[in-house]
Image 1 (cartoon, rainbow, N blue to C red):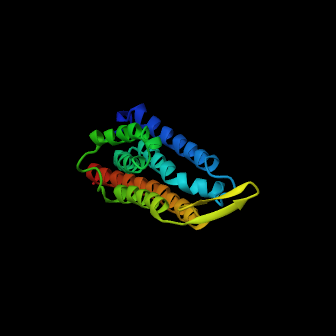
Image 2: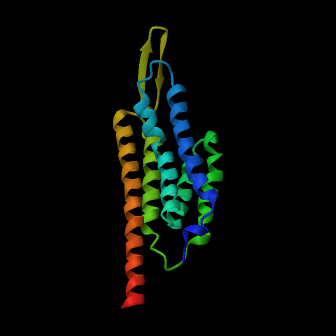
Image 3: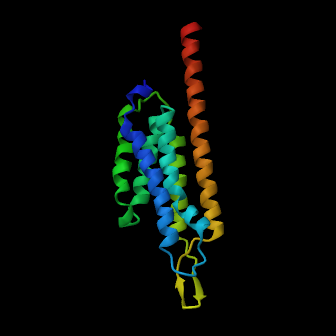
Length: 190
């Protein structure tokens, strides 16, 4: 049986580091863009949202004593981190999250929901990376172009999916906790 005291500080720290790294990625995406680019803060937030979502998934798992959420977040983060060498340091956080697998017991809960939530994060990140949206723009000093920008629609989809994933993880963790409490009461008092 998993107890909150079994969780170490490393897992929570890995979640927070991932959230902060996602916010940093948003800032880099915004300021690293070309002058005159149609991408703004909203597009940058949408681009970084899946990384922040993986960190939030880990934090929910850590705070609500659901190590399976941490494991799923670690796997999702590892897949997203290999897209760019800049994101390789997040593999350390992903490894720490995945190490929570040692606290998962066979009778704890089914792994379907956490892994579907992590797969949703990876899917929306892949959608942002691989869906081509060519754009050109002009500025007083010249112009620019890109074969792939993050549009407002893509950013909206990304932010919406991440919000659903985080809320879904909280709902799932609470529901599993209630089910476990009811099962314990029926065995003890029934």
